[in-house]
Length: 330
Length: 44
Image (cartoon, rainbow over all chains, first blue to last red):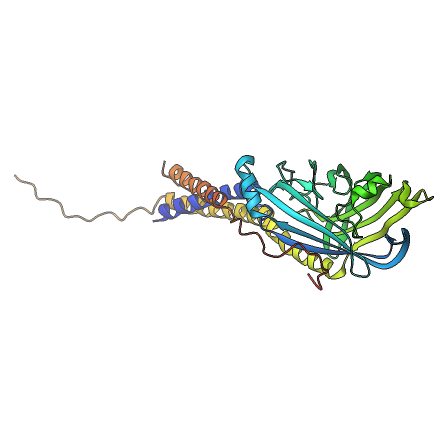
């Protein structure tokens, strides 16, 4: 009976000991992925910003400019791309909608971001675009990979349509969450006008005819929770100018927008809570379960060996039988 | 010999379990019916 139990315990010990590395190194990279149907919105605000009045073509101070950013997972598009890509793909249809203090639209820039659901590496397929212009992204956008490392990453800038390094600048504590701080500076770069302009009748083509060009610079800051790769907070010191052309009269340049863009407080609290709960799931797969299974395996193996040793211990000598002598035939 | 069979059984079950779970994965679900926002939401 003891030998049977020890064999069962041995099988369980091997089961759990094997599960430990399998969960960490096989299951986690395959199970940890961005859901294809994810939907999320974010509100950012630039208080005391500078905004161009297209009526007078003069920059003016405004109390607040609001940016509403939506990302919506397009499941049908991702399934279609997965057939040729041969891997799990996420297609995010996004919209950055900028609203002035009067509630009127300042700009609206749609984009389609296609990426590997596990690694966040960009996937190139038809439909990848920013504001209707086909682009070929290199590097990440919006989210870092799971198990983010303390190193620089390549980050795609949708305004300039370029990829540039975003530098790791240290580890910080953000509202009780350990985060990696990343910063990217995009120097003054000529960028296209948005397809949707704030004034009816003005189009990017009609502005281009005047010779006026649009320039942009930004300092992008992200505080990223490293296990999930999710930014818990973000800021941008963003400046846009219109330069040259007949549209500006005798002026060389005019500020189109300048502001320090920050996440709205209620969205910060919401994001921190969400990331904290997702962080627990990643910890479960990368730490709690692997170490727990390993400990359980060692415990069961010890128990199995103990039972086996007891089963093999020589038994006490059996009492001598006092059997009657058999009759002998003469 | 019996110990070897027991260990092999444990290993096989572990492999089968992990391979099954990873093969099944999570369902993709459906695209959200919610629109891309052009108004400022009151709260998350």
